[in-house]
Image 1 (tube, rainbow, N blue to C red):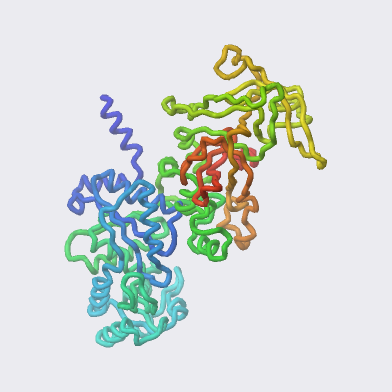
Image 2: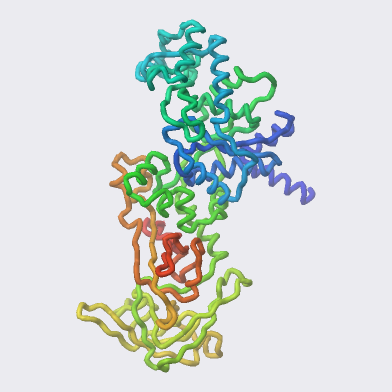
Length: 564
């Protein structure tokens, strides 16, 4: 068997079920062998990491099969929608590396949707109902018990047309009446039991102003907008699977030829230690539990971007978990692993001391400095290097010194030797404490023969620590972000979300010492702080004070705590 055939068969095996359906449609010539998808967010909030999975399949399928993907805003509820969200959604899609063929809005089709609703009324397939929402819900019955017909179900067509017109003219108050499709109150599919297709909303629309006062429901607008646009593959998450028969029913009433969009459903993205519902995210913003939609603890794409996540890491993660027909909860550690893996390959290693204590090399000449070479990224042989200044007085991490260390402690302790990264081997000779017992200075002697790169530098010691020169560093704020919730599945916990919050989800450290190489870093620039984690420059940075966000630690401390 040839290599090409083997590769082709392997490619076939790796297709997800949506790709397999698309290939089958293309092979059979369905819808003139076109592939057209759409990403249809509602502009009522910022996109979260769950939306990234939908974006990747919607835009990815179109790209993979030579089709197009449109961006369509589902703006059928003016109360919650705003152009701020439209702009942020566009920014997020482009950040993930995609672009749309066209931008549409459900509101572009309000006239066509209205005309279709009128068509249904004239065909005796829709009626105006004046019952309350509670009455309608009660009459719908249960999955095992048929519904009861509305007393308005037999209303004359002309009366329905007149009332429907007045609904949009503002004659009636919100909640006083709705337009319902007349399908089957005895259907085993609850969505077929005369679903509401229009309701009155007296709130200015962000695009159409006050031109409309009757607005279509999602189930009525979604499929028809797909049809109007020419969508072939309408890809949704699994909760819409039970809506698909209704999707098809409406399009059957509307279609005038053989073209039909088809809806496919995949498992939504859910994470441990994370809440993705817009209701909860909005609450955390409005109640100032977090600082905004782009708070680095937020699972929004805006928040992940500010925290230092890369689109490549998100793509790699989504490729790993794939698309299935079964819902499940993914370990957030898998996403964190993906960003570590990506950043490890591309970012520069730098020295940053977050909890500094002064180290004085007593036998190093006062006033002398040396320039050491630090490799930018050992994973990338073409990454080059940068210079760091070495001097008599340095800052090291407080955790890198212990007065009375256990046997397997290989950092600084009296009488012990360590290597200073990119510099010399030193031996601890003593320390100084203040009145409260805190170590304020550590003393050591260096071996001048052991400078990195020199013949004697190969002498082995068990510990290596990082440092910055007192002569060549600056102060910065470092924000240590961690998981927002302390429980693994906060969505299943009945307690208020404020009781589930991790009190250590943010630790702001001031007076951290940065090597001077970082002074020219721009907002969004990413680095590995040696032995600490991955960090990026935050937008709160100013000329006088730089702020760094921890993207992720070098290792998964949560997995270690759980004994994994």
